[in-house]
Every structure is written in structure tokens, then in C-alpha cells.
Image (cartoon, rainbow, N blue to C red; front, side, top):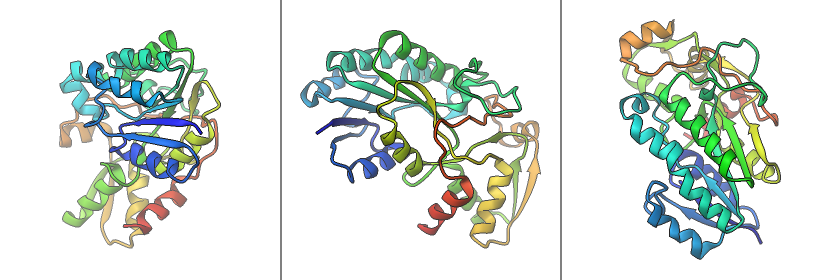
Length: 274
């Protein structure tokens, strides 16, 4: 039986992984931030008791604009804290599975980014995540880095829920239409992650269809049969309206190593549960 330590089990992706792993024959140790804070080296001692075969690290500072405001915290969580986590993984010869982001790319391409493309992040969030990748690749031979994008699912803040909340309060919505990526359902990513545990290095796992935030918002409104209107706006206008701090890539579509469901199907499933 494989022992899996799931770090960040109380987050959106962690929740989906926990639910998925619990249906398998693996022995799961679901660790919330209260159980293990990766920025606190002392709390990592719990891994000495578990002696895991696999460590799934879902702990991250993912507030893209928040990273700009508190860059030290971003680097501490997304980069520096990984050093002690890697030491624990190496000590137990455990595979460290770490989740990264499409925002490690600058968005200047117009075709999907492959794992061979050179990252060039243009935000503190992307830079801190890329530094985390580099630290893992340098210090930990037994690793799997999974880049994903535009996550949505239960038990966490996500774009789909944000649109529903805004639609409840506003008849007209304004949504960015010049950023394109691949929405990815957390439960699809969780299942694909479990099927990829024998791989090493860097892989991409995202939903198979891409869209803009505007197109995704329109799809959500349509699926819920709401009568709200959705208007497209530019990123520059959104920066002005919503006081956004971070530069986002205009195109961050990833070439997925494995084909996951497109957002049309997965959003429908997610909304059916709400």
C-alpha cells in the first residue's frame, strides 16, 4: 500500500485530491495548513511519523494580485518553503508532486505552450512559482511538477463561482476578453494526477478546450439559464475598473500531456452540483 501525504488538503485542489484518493487503495494522510504549514520547518516533522512514499504539495500562495502586494510572502510560500519540504521528501525517498501554473509563461505565443517552451513569467506569482520549480529540479531527483491552469471546483474561490456571485448582484457583467487559457476542473486534474504518478519531470495537465474569461463567463450564465448580460472588456480596462496589480499573460494555453475534459462538459457537471 502506497502512503500519500497530501499537503494543503483543505484547499480547492486538495479537496478534490482527497476525495479522489479516498476511493483508491492508497493510504492517505490529508494534512491541512493547521496540520502542516510548509513555511514552518518544525511542522514538517509530522512527515517523519508518516514516512510517505508520495508527497502531494497543494500548498501555495495563489492570489495573483496579492503576490504583487506581498512579494516576500509569495516567494516564501511558493519558493523558499520548498527547500525544507524537499529535504523531507529526500529523507524518505518520497516522490514530491508539486503543482505549478500556466503563469510561468509570458503569453507572447499564439499556439499552446509545451513543456519544451522556455518559461518567462511577467508577474510575481509566476516568478515565485517558477523559482519553486527550479528549486525542486535542482534539489530533488524524485519529483513530478504538474503545470495546470484556470482551476475551478468546490471548496475554494474560483472564477465560475465569482461569476455566479456577481450575477446575483448585477444585471450586467463586464469580463476580460483578451486573455485566453484552459479552464480545468479540479476533479479532472485530481484523477489525471493519480494516473500520472509514475511520471517524473514536468508535465502539463489542463482541460482540452481553451477560451477567454469572457467566453467562460457567458458559458456559465447560459448553463444556469440566467438573464444577465455579459460585455467584453480589455485587460487595460479591467486594470482601471478593478485596480488589478499583476500583469497576466494574454495567451497561456498549455499543451496538455493528457487530454482532460473540455470546460463545456466539466462546467456543466460542476454547476449541476450547485
